[in-house]
Image 1 (cartoon, rainbow, N blue to C red):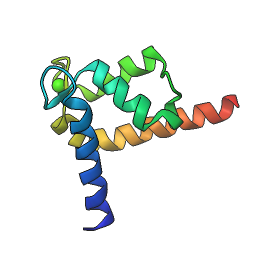
Image 2 (cartoon, rainbow, N blue to C red):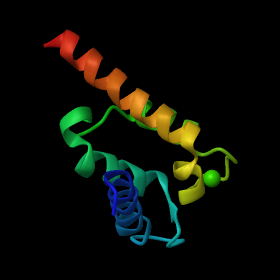
Image 3 (cartoon, helix red, strand yellow):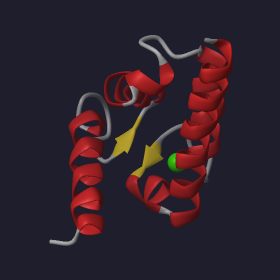
Length: 98
Ligand SMILES: [Ca+2]
């Protein structure tokens, strides 16, 4: 498997680990997304990410605005680029504070 394929496989695995916790097993609720971000990106976002930041991220990811984030929405290349950019932005703004 190429590094890129491994990364996608890991992303899918992590997605399903959290999406299966409550309600629809194939979509992330806001709570599940918060848990995923806190646990998997805690180093970048801090242990309890800012609620406004989370709400904005959830809204940006929830393309069809049904209140759930499915893998298609996270899997969209534009969305992924956007997510990586957001994580970078968070890291940069945290860097400025410290
Ligand atoms: Ca959605």
